[in-house]
Image 1 (cartoon, rainbow, N blue to C red):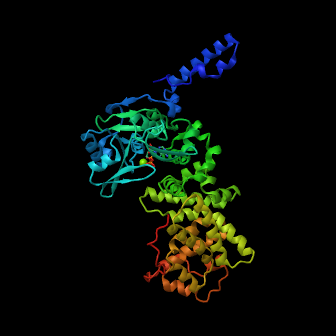
Image 2 (tube, helix red, strand yellow):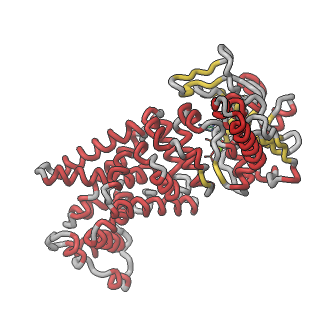
Image 3 (cartoon, helix red, strand yellow):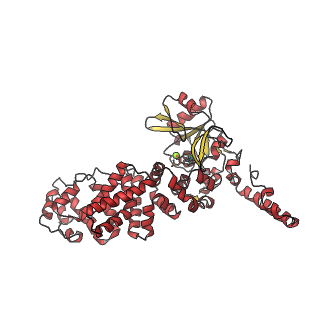
Length: 501
Ligand code: ATP
Ligand code: MG
């Protein structure tokens, strides 16, 4: 209800002004005007103090006034919604799916909110399982598709009401069931708190999400600092969603980043790994990276990357940007992408610099690279838990880099046969901005791979390895080769198989 939730003038600083009555009266009436005025412009603003708001203002947008069509909702999600509804429960599509459908996008997952408890959902769907401790919910499984069904969560402010645990302002368990109104205000952004009602195909808007979709802005629900303290990952979600949707982050929602960013150090590293995949491997990686850096949050997630970039390493910046742009392009083409390549890109600067430091101090090259990789990965995994299978690949990609400089015959073929050759070679190409020598090296290896095995072997026989630039001439130019029939074996055994970002 516009204007009913605002801080009353009685509670404003005006009341402490004491005897200066007339002045106070005038000031108070100006305040009243301003609050009324603001409330009219932004009726939901006063719900910012969401935790103390009991009934948010509801706006129902009927079917004919919005663009969501059942054609664009997955069959599985529709089945879940209908079944719940027919069993007498409320059932809504909610969250990112509603937001994305309103924006004309194609949601990748569909979440359902209901007043049925997880146990009731379990009874209703044989193809379901209950998951989660922090947030208990049901997964209803239709082949490869999983529909997440969550019971409305309450604010649970009264003591002893259900199972919510808050430690140092942070929500560590949240299983208090509530009404749809309560469920709406405990979501993160207003645009994420829209409910598509399967019973009449309307959209229910409790917090002004519809207006924000139109204005292309992300407002946090409630007091931003409180909401970030409850869950610091919301700061990263703001950045990620702004990048994905092309929305701006409301000033009040980005203002606490500098002060509260350090709280990300306490966020679960496994969760930050998931979040970083959504950020960088979902098609908006470059934009997300830029926003993350600009918002000052990069250093809390990838300290080594932020440090290297702060040193003004422009070649590293070019490498990262190109790596992310390539990844985005692959995602857009529906090709696969691997986290290992991407994390190798992000952390390269620090690994390379450490390895150089130690080799110049006299450490043997392979040992220096191993130690540098171990140190950087070790530090990174305290923030973002990159699974071992990826860190192993990253370490291989890095440690193969110096081997590209060794272009003697045996070594060339051994490197080409390495299972990570393709990824390491693509990584070498990304490093082109580091120096002209590296660019030439990349070209040399690109040519070398196109040559038939015998031609390459002949070209390398007897060639004295003098470093990258000198060796390019040792390989016949690709133009000469094209006149011959390919001899079949290329020497690049892993070539087409491996699939770097
Ligand atoms: P995406 O497009 O990445 O799926 P999303 O908004 O759907 O974006 P999900 O992680 O799928 O993100 O979350 C689904 C919904 O759950 C959100 O739209 C939001 O309503 C709610 N939600 C998710 N994370 C939080 C959080 N940390 N705090 C409050 N609400 C959250
Ligand atoms: Mg989602």
